[in-house]
Image (cartoon, rainbow, N blue to C red):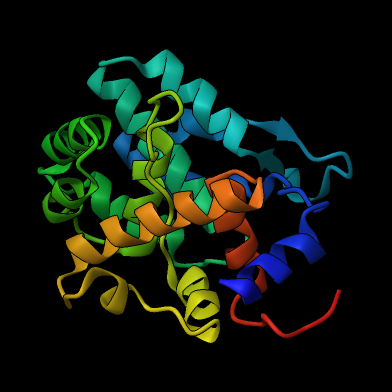
Length: 223
């Protein structure tokens, strides 16, 4: 994709920043489920405004590594992923996270989908992730967070509306790449293509995913 290569060349010096979140917004939704301690993750903001904290992908990776196979720690990681994915802009994030925490399927779903991701079967993970309050934009964040396979494994990536907006604006669609409207296959095709592109451009696939997320369809704007 020549247009995608051009985007990468124009933006390759950019780097993803940590996400800002406000613990006081989340605490009332997490405390009833014994999950408010997750809000201590990350670091406090330098300006100290509103008690906000910063949470990055590195923090999620560290939490994943500490979690191991412990169900409670995996639940903590899931909550941290939801916080990271929501930041201060998604006001529905706390409510949706509380809905997932109240869903009795949560432990089994987290365990099964984590295993499918680590087995290199993103389509199976996609099929099996069914929880109240959690759609594709967030459960693929979970997939990306729990995938600890070393290179050159094509690790799971986030696929949300903003990434899709950018890809569609470039003339690429998941259903055409997969040859089907079936979303598990489309997600797998997305991962495969992104890793192939990233390798040819000399960047990482998760950086490319973040770039497409950041552009949110504005692929023709000049920096």
